[in-house]
Length: 371
Image 1: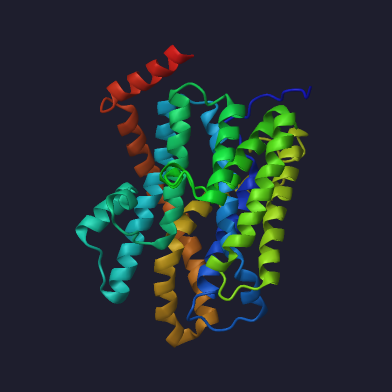
Image 2: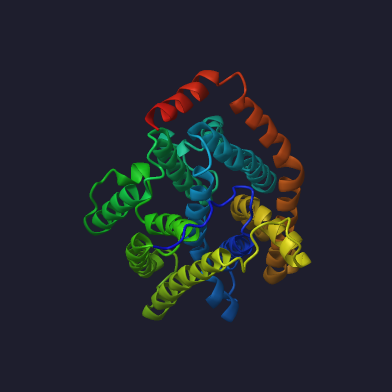
């Protein structure tokens, strides 16, 4: 039997994932900018960035790992508070930024109902369109968080083997039959293999390469490869067989990189804690890159395209895209440094304070009774 490693400290940072997350975010940004339908032909650069959308499933794999680390060490309500504080403050800032840029550039403004619905992130349930199309990934994340929260409340989150097996089996059935038709209401069937893989990599880091991981991870990989091949046509115009194969190779590379990172972490070869003396690039640069990832994703799409379209007549498309990327990075740094922290502190105080004592008590009491 593999020796069990100590549980991952929630305060620890796997810095390699910070860098990986930033690369994924930048890939998505360049995909949206360089591969716009009306964009000029950027030759080889455009041929590379057309695969940038694959940063999204990589995000979901990282999310599976990070959420497993977070949930394993928190009560249900503490987990929910941590996720809300992580998700909403930056999202509200990003939403305000997008609305302001669009209004200033084109005079368009969402209806009050659409704006309020988007602020909740439940606008899809309420029947309102996203103000920025990239917000669909946040809905997928919210559903994932909700499922983890339910598992925590029921006291079964640490029984990974049975619920991961059920989840993967239902995903497999849904992808081939479309049933159960309501699966998408609760969790994304298309991206489930990536969420599950992230959790499995956490289990590998925590307890070694067990027989369960050895069976489940290849199954997730095969499903992910198939989805990578199948959905390429949704993101690449007139997709070719070669392009589909490149997508498959990219997904396989994600799994390989993640495997190497997790195995190296287990062997204490990859940076885990920021308080260990390491080169400056590890201790300082990568955490900043990781912190910029979420706001960069939130800010870049609609607002960035508006800025690019405004600048093109004056400085040309290549320069406009370059300056817009730099501007988005600067805005992301401002958001994460000055705007998000006070909002996050206020939201955390609200959720942990006297406004929610009954819910806080009920959820934790329920968990204590089950355990």
